Length: 487
Ligand SMILES: *Cc1c(COP(=O)(O)O)cnc(C)c1O
Image 1 (cartoon, helix red, strand yellow):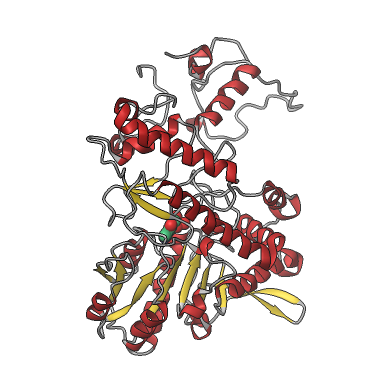
Image 2 (cartoon, rainbow, N blue to C red; image 1 turned 120 degrees about the vertical axis):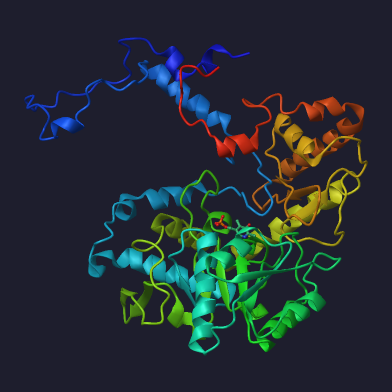
């Protein structure tokens, strides 16, 4: 049943209503202002004609139809959907930054260059790498650039034949995709029973054609690879490099460093760990860090400090080149700089510790009701394998949809692929104990309903503006604009 205010804006439209008033232009009507005749409209565009309150209510209603972090908890595993302080948004919106023209001479952009330089230094310190390029716009672009560096490094050593990249079967989809995009052959290895890298399988896959291994630690099951030093030794011993997918950095900030674990190249997701909202396709950043002897391959430009002056460094002939116009998504980098400065070393460490504590709290509270395939302390996230009771016909998807009715965004489902009925939960550090308890209560209620009233799960969500979406059809033939004949 549609309510009055759910009406589409075209249904509210009627001839002659307006929601704006423009001042007189002060320009005599001089006709088409030099626009060629053939480009001029012959008919007015079909736009809704509504009053100001109608337009405001329309957009406000739309903004509420999407669940967001400003409305509640968003425990979407692997995505680190934490609350981002609004102060950082204000800082990035300051006209002194947002109005900077990318063609300004370096002397007039010293503040912005300093922010970038300091962010590079701080990220290097947090991860144990030697230097970062801030260019990549996302994690996946960082991965692509990192693998291009793998290739350039091997070629520089006369080992261009190394064309294979190893990934575990628990890896995020972007890892094999980036490797293929960079021209490598992807070799997948099965995980061991405990969910970590199977060292026998790794040993068998390593040979003189292998360029390297891509890993995230903690891995996508939320488990820390305890044998990471041994794994690094194996890969390096076979002449390969180690890539760190830093999307899971929220678990270990200030506690452990990928550089110390033996990783050679790493990306970080500013839009997960470092205070940029994630999702909705907004701008992100995936800075790429490397160990000392790989700096010469970094995408250009990086930022250097000469004396007291900051400047762009366009690198030498060995750089893999440019990845992005200008200097990366500066506003996102600025928010990361503010976030790190505000929290400081102790604050970052505490954020990770609380993220890990919160995940373990939920896991331990619910593990009797939901199947826990890897029962050991987790890091910032963990994976259930559906309901423990095995209520007949009730699927992971039903549990997720029912959560929407109870006011929560569902966790990630059916990923990682190695857990059949995966419910991947990442609460993050920004939820209070009361929020965590409310989420646990909702999950307990769903587990009871699964046997007592399974239709509630099967028919969920009842409260959302759209019910179950045909995701395939939505992706293959999206309807992106209003048409009159739509029901
Ligand atoms: C999000 C994520 C990525 C990809 O990052 P994007 O910025 O979305 O490209 C890679 N690996 C893991 C584990 C992730 O969670």
